[in-house]
Length: 612
Image 1 (spheres, rainbow, N blue to C red):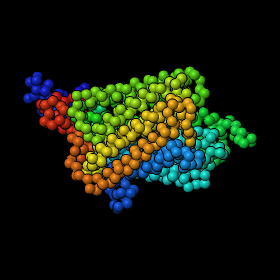
Image 2: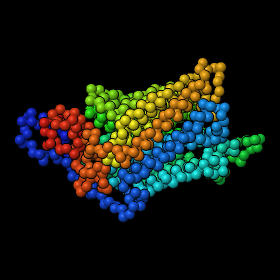
Image 3: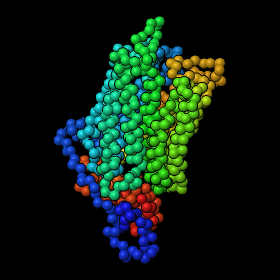
Image 4: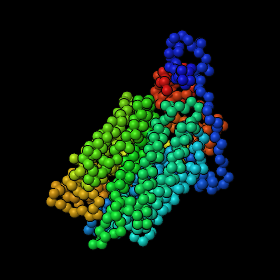
C-alpha cells in the first residue's frame, strides 16, 4: 500500500481484516517498497594481512581501530588525573612541580574531550553502526575513511610528542587561552603549545574526511525501505553530531592556525601589547577575547558533539532492554536536531567573566535556558519509554539508567552556571569542575560502557562476563558520585580550581585536605576498576561465552546480518529490505515480543504495529 507521496504505509493489519477487505489486498500490495535509487556498492577486497587489519577500508575494522586508539589515549589521560589528584590531596609530598601539574591538567583535559570522547563516539561507534544500521555494505568512501583514521593516529602521535620536547607539553590549561599560552613563563610556551595546535589541526582534517563519510552514507546509502524516519536514534545522534562538528571544528582549526602563526612568526592575531618583566614585547593590536570566542564557538557545540551520540545510543539501549516501543520517536529526532541547532547560540556562557556587555550576558543566559527544553523532552521520553516496560536489568540497561540520573544531575547544576549572577562567583571554583565532569565526563562514559556491553557480541561473537561487569558498574557509578558530589560543596565554599596545592582554610567548615584526600582515594579506586573492565574485554574476546545470534532480541539491522560477527560487505549477497522502524517491541498480537525491521507486514498480519 502506498500514500500520495509514493511511500509505503505501515498499515495496522487488524484494521485491514476488520473492514473485511483482506481478500482484496494482496501480499505484494502490503509489502510494497519503493524501488532502489542507488546501485549496490563496489567493495574493495583486501589482498594481504596489512590491508585487512592495519590499513583496512572496512568500516567495522576502522571503528575498532578508532576505539582502541581512543581508549589507549584515554588511559594516559586517566593516569595524568591520578597524578594530579595525588598532588592536590597530599601537597606536602611535592609529587609534582607546579609546571608539571599544569601541563598534566592541560593534557588530561584535551585528551579526554577531543581524543577520547569525540574520537570514540564519532570515529568508533560511527564507523561501526552507521553502515550496519543503515543497511549498507560500507561507508560511501572507504579509502577516505581509512585515511581519516590514520590522520587521527598522526594527530595523537604529534600530541604525545610534546612530552619529549624541550619544555614539555603546554601548561596553558585545556582552553589554551592566549596570551598566557604563548608567553614566556608558561610551561611549554614554545614547542609544547605548537605541537598541541598542530595536533588539533590534524585532528580536524582527519575528522573532516570521516565526517563527510558519515553524512553521505546516512543520506545516500540507506538500504531499500530505510527512510530517515526509520533510522535508529543512534544513527540520528551520530549524524547530527557530525553535522555540528563540520560547522564547529573550522573555528578551532582557524584559531589553532592563527595562534601557531602568533607563536612561530610573531604575528598578533591574539596578542595585544604586552609588557613582560618590564620589557615591551613586539606584539600589538591582537585580541585575546577573539580566541575565546573562536574556542567556545567550537567548545560548546563540542559538548553536544559528544552528548548527541550518547542520547541516541541510550535511547536504543533503553528501548531494547525494557522491551518497550520508544516513546515519541519523531519528537526525539526533532529534539536531537533542535539541540544541535541551538548549541551554536550559547557558546559565550563560558565567557561571563571575560568582561562582556551585560546585554550579551542576558542573551546567552536566555539561550542557555532555552536549550534545556529539547534536552528535557528527551529525559521525559526516556522515562515514559521505561514506564510499564518489561525492564531487563542487564548491564547495558544499568549503565543507561545511571546515565539518565547523572546527566540530569549535571544538567541541573548547569542551570546554576547558565545564570550570569550565579556563574560569576562560581566560575573559578570546583563547582565548575564538578558540573563539567558530571555532564561531559561521567555521563558519556557511562553510555560508552553500556554500548560496549551491548554491541560486544556483535563485534566478537562472545558475551562479556556479567559478574565482572556488575562489579565494574557499581564501583564506577557510586565511585563517580563520591568523587564529584563533594566538589560541588568545595565550589560553594569558594575552593578555587587550577591550584596545584590547596591547604585548610578558616573559611571552610570541613577540612579541605581531608575532603581532597577522600576524593583522591575514590578516584584511584574508580580508575583501578577500569583495569578490571579492560581485563574483561580481553578475556571475553578470547574465552568468553559464545553469544547466540541477536542475543538481545533487537530489531535493528546490525543484528540481522547472515553471520555474526558480520563479514566484509555486512549483508551477504542481498542487502536487507526494511519494512518498519526499529522499535516494534511488545506488539499486541505478534508471536514474539520483537519484530525486526526486515519483517514484512504480511508476516505479522494479526499484530497491531505502529505506522512508521
